[in-house]
Length: 361
Image (cartoon, rainbow, N blue to C red; front, side, top):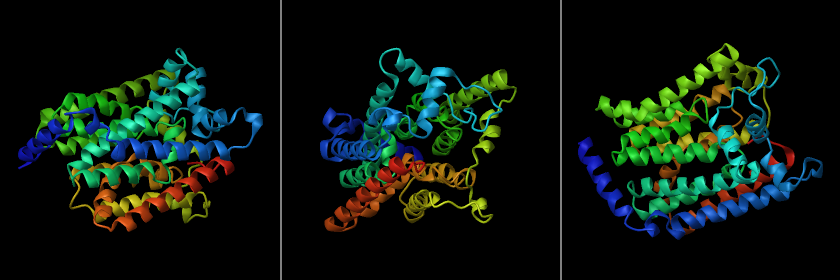
């Protein structure tokens, strides 16, 4: 049964790559990408207002975690025993920034790369969603993801676009039986976030009936993370320094909410993450089990490890948006437009408040 399902997926994939127009359809991929990027960038640039920090673009590029990633790329990880150590940040994004700095301005180069990776990710979402509902579901899935209120982060110096593109295309490649390629792509997710290994776990679930396939899809990520742990041990004496130093960041956790550690900035993150989880629950019968495992493992633990940021994590997790496309496809066209318009308003508000009042996305 499983082999037959994957055989169908391969046949569909072969038709999908017949022409560039099918890979990047205008209304289903390019248009939502372009609109969401224009809205996000314009709002972010309009919201920042501190000339002392440089140009508007520089203020956006160095906002929040972006400043840490740029500093790591330029100066390394630095000491461990400081209030906000840089070791919780994984190495792929700083490494890319450092490489790109040899070719162009590092902030501008990573900005352009993130836009292109987001476009690539949306193309992959369209590809996966079309297999679970046809072109209409695919288009609605992409529009839902592109206009999600946290999607402005894909235009900032964050690893969000890398993680999304890696996770989407790892599943595309697994469904097309390119297991080693999927495993190598999954390394991108494993090296941008400490919890990036959940993608490898989900890929194993997708191919659980074959140990050989499981090794191919998960092995490269495990090797990459082990290598990073060895590097951390060599530099700091602690192979898990990215976890042990995280406590100094004073994260707001689910348990902490009941201990009086409450900030209003948590609210949009929790609402967006819960919305994504609700979609997974509602559409659990129409989404692959491996996708559900990926979504749950990526979102639920973050509610305890650090609630500020889970709204952004929800936007980096593609299965809820395929589920959203399946739900919206059953709605009247006016209701679809209203839902996407409301999401766009949420995007504008979240981006503006985050940039103007430094609400961490």
